[in-house]
Length: 536
Image (cartoon, rainbow, N blue to C red; front, top):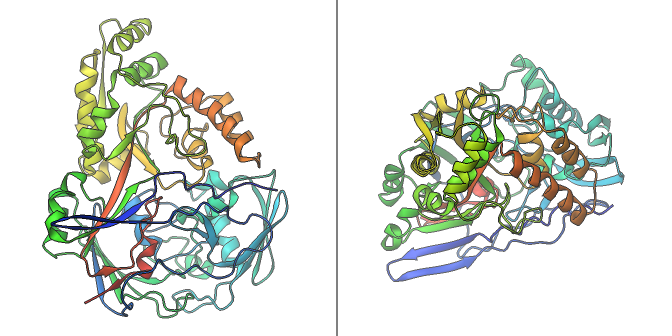
């Protein structure tokens, strides 16, 4: 069986560069395209970190200025990127992603497909949870079944519906059976949402994880002060020898873009995420190191398809023709992104559509579609928006101005992030600007976001033909054939338009020159913190 699961490095290669007064020196990060093993034994060792000048030093406390505070600490239920970037350094998965999204061993020392519907994983021996308990196969079984449990209401449960049985022949072996061939399985298990938790610790906490975190990762959860800091401390018993190098990582939420930029420029923090692209040139004289470039993310204008006027697909199509995606990228992110004119994937991603569908803006066509939908005088609706993430808030403002010309009048309701997220998850909106990211296989966003009844299908969207195509796609082992199926599915999305795709944003991290060993991941992960060291 050949699934070619790891040919996922077709996004733009990430770059790392040190910015100085005289110019930019670029260091290209290798985005390996070698397929990850899907049958036979996987390599048992973890590849070394990228070469960094100088001898790594042990110790030090890294302060990170983050765009947002964490929203929940249960890795199986939270939907917040700010939470996952912390939790991925506390927990591990069976397998993990490399920077270019190739799949590598993690808690599983090796793995193999014994037949098209059966996978065997062999655990590393001697791995300990932070509490001191040894990791056993029962913890893996418990973790995956916890995600699948409908009572937990995990937004990731749909990714594991293909699994029919998880067995543990011994303490270090896990057998996973699926009802049909399931091509994305390794990519699903590598996602940071599939964290392996301590069964005994979770049961002792009454099944709750927001107030406890007993992982196997390089850092232990130490302290959380809302809207002030989250502190992780070094796990001296981490199973990868020599990691982590830091004594602690301190996450400090700095939502305001200007303040976050100032924090790293003045040395208040050592590194920041979500560097505002407008400030990249400003940093030229600061000798700061910048990591990043293209990321696999989607920024969109979504609709509640059960509420007028967006229950009519022609109104949604009118929005798609009335927006100017190039102008939105410029307004939202200073041009540091790629307009999405044909579905939810970049054209460089293997299932992406190559030709634009909603290319050049056509206001006349938008007005004609509104008239066909029974709204010759235009429509009025509410757009819930958040300024907490400027690249979302600014996109909403730009879209509002553009849509007025077509007779689509959106009244912006601007909300603080936690309130915005609560309403979004509750499907309490008419329209909303939001996004999703961190996917490595197309099945994740296609299934989890659009299939009828899925937890993350916030648009109340349903199309049986689309659902059927997504179900077919995961059973196809040949990547080229899978791509054909997913392109047909995207054509349906582009006709029905439960959301209008706007752009895929670049992402950057800025850090002091003494921060060494950091690697930018295409899925926005910060797992390379375990390899980071401070040269001072």
